[in-house]
Image 1: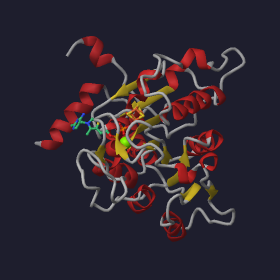
Image 2: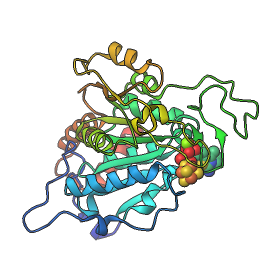
Image 3: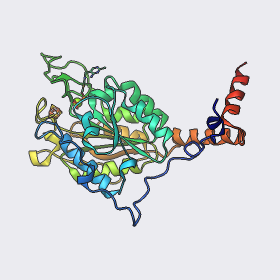
Image 4: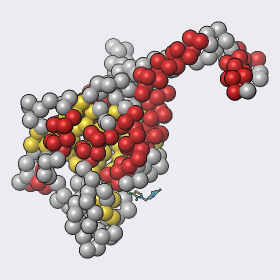
Length: 317
Ligand SMILES: Cc1ncc(C[n+]2csc(CCOP(=O)(O)OP(=O)(O)O)c2C)c(N)n1
Ligand code: SF4
Ligand SMILES: [Mg+2]
């Protein structure tokens, strides 16, 4: 081992710290403008609901004065998952269904960042179904926005886990026969500590839900109805007052800490309720790991990297 390596101090800066909120911009450093955060022109079909979610993410970045190096946008694969391409900051368009484990690694190793994950219903609940469950139960601090359009958009109209019964697609030409999953019930049952529902046609509400999820210290899940105008036109008209539908907010007297009541709200017939269904402040994996790391670093205080490694090898003998 080279001298430089052996002399390197053990990094404790990112191990012993619990997650910290995104720092506010200082006087000297102004927050970013939309122009500074917007990257490529989004390649979505005109009228796609995903445009609205992206615009509100820009608004969130502007409003919360997040800087380029603090923005972390992760996604899987799908139309919705193209999201990070359109944000001029750090991010990754990762593997189909695997955005959450990738994002978890970032969240656990970089407590100074707030990680946002965007994706679709197929990405989240088909191929990524297991990762959803485990990221939720581990209560990893990140915000997961699922842009639910009830269809596989990118691959041109296959039945998704949220497609309703009878939906005609390339994989169900005679209409879907499989019972759809309910993302809200799924999230609550999996142990997500923040569960909210919104719709891309109500911009103020989308922004409010994303902000609340970001402020939550834990796994924040937001289901955002986002119409695929190409392959499932009109899917969410019943939730849009401009199309004769109803946007009904979670009742004011709803106790967000009551899991059973949240589950009942989630069971309402479509268009159901919009708002925060459930919130629980139990400790995150981030905080627990940080504590373990701190205790371990205390034990090896003063030792060089190679000495710590040697100790590990000795233990394994
Ligand atoms: C391992 C793997 N399997 C399948 C695919 C094909 N594929 C790409 S996107 C997609 C589904 C996308 O649906 P959704 O997550 O709902 O996103 P949307 O396009 O509707 O936003 C599938 C099956 C893939 N890219 N990788
Ligand atoms: S196919 Fe659907 S989900 Fe994909 S960009 Fe077009 S409208 Fe949006
Ligand atoms: Mg979809």
